[in-house]
Length: 124
Image 1 (cartoon, rainbow, N blue to C red):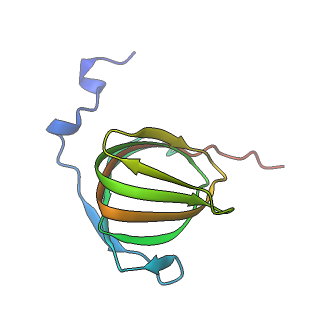
Image 2: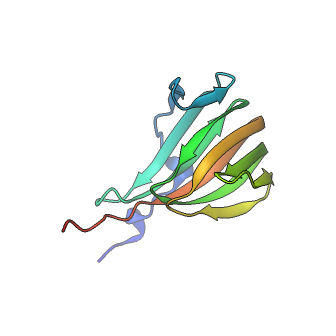
Image 3: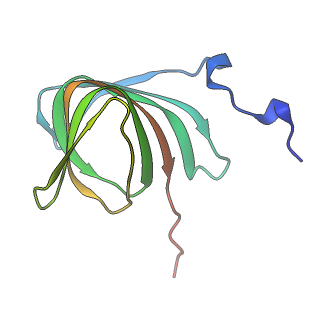
């Protein structure tokens, strides 16, 4: 049985921030500095929650996980592999499905809360 001390409270954690630049193969425009602060990972490592941010730029995306996003700051344009796009701004909440591919462009410095679930594929 779990108790109140088992609740992960982000504000009381000192989670490390990992900063990085995208690889040349992934990056399309700019050289955006990005960071991730993963506040929680489940024991099976399939479920992650944290905060991501990026400077302006664009890159290719290919999702193997489901990702819930809540945009806290900035503006981004997500474009699918057929060229159809969606602009997301502060307050927008959405889920990107596993299998989605296309591009992500940060127009203005972007911060989002993410909740990711990576389904394990059964070995046959």
